[in-house]
Each structure stands twice: as structure tokens, then as C-alpha cells.
Length: 212
Image 1 (cartoon, rainbow, N blue to C red):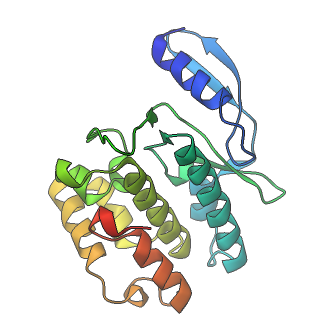
Image 2 (image 1 turned 180 degrees about the horizontal axis):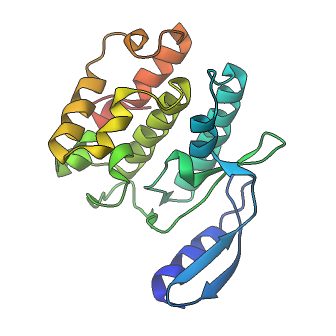
């Protein structure tokens, strides 16, 4: 087994949280495959398969579980760095589990090392995309990605922002800048509540030092 897969295996097996999936085995083929626990589907597939807005209680439940899992990682000085809907698996009993720690890293909160190319670009914060090393934070990177996951659920994945993945990098950056400047999320998500809007805005602050 290559070193990268073994590092991921060790990290996940050392994390003991109900919202973090366990790796059950490593299969060595021409590429190494880590097997996580079986689940019915992932968050991306679920959101894109429904025709009506997601139940708000379900969104709150998923967000709470996701934040608890990521906070647990951060308390153990591990940043996930690739939080996105298809790395969040769903169980029929309402539980979620975070998977894929292949790009995660251990970090020292007092000595930040800039990582520009780990997070999937669609969920990557502006400071990563624009190379603002001075303001980089592993924790803030994960919090931005959580915010995008929340917006993805609230908008049923149909926000124009999410179509930017099909465009060039300048369009992605342009849309992210627009996203940070929205004075009201109701322009994109009409049924967003004031508390949801406040929370989403606190996760998607342009300045990473201002994110919760």
C-alpha cells in the first residue's frame, strides 16, 4: 500500500467520532482503494435527486452533525480540506458521516502552511484561489467549504454559483467574489430565514479571519 493511502488510513482510524466514517479495509489494485462504511447515498446525489426544497429540519440536522465532525477534527489538529457534498454520506436513520481524508493534514494553529491546491475548486475559499498566503487558515478553509455545502442544500444545488465548475478559473473567482458581496441571500435563496442567512454569511466571509 502506498504511503498516501496508509497516512489516510491512520488518520481516520485515530479519529473516533460518530459523524466520521470508519475505514474498514484497504484494497491494493493498480490504485489503492479505501473502503468506508456502506451508506445509502451521498449528500450531492440526494440534493440533486429531489424536486422540492429540502426539509429545513433535515438541513439543520446535517449541518449540526457536519460542524460537530469538523470541530472534532480541528480539536485534534486535523484539517479535512476537501469538504463537499459527495464526501458526506447519508444513512437512512438521519446520520451523516464525513469521508475521504486523502487531502487532510495535521496543522499547527500558530504556524499556518499555505495549501493552495487541496480543496475541490468549487468549495475552495477566495484566499486559496487567489493565493493570499498571508491570510490563509486551515480552519477557515474548512469553514468556507461547510458554508458552501449549506448553500448547496438550501438552494437544492441550483445556484448559478455551482454551475461555475464548468467554466474557466476566472469565472469561478468572479462568482466567488460576487457571492461574498451579496447583501441579501434572498436574491439567491428566496425562502432562507434570517437566522439561516446570518449563519451562512458568517461562514462565507471574504476575509478568513472573520469566519466563525
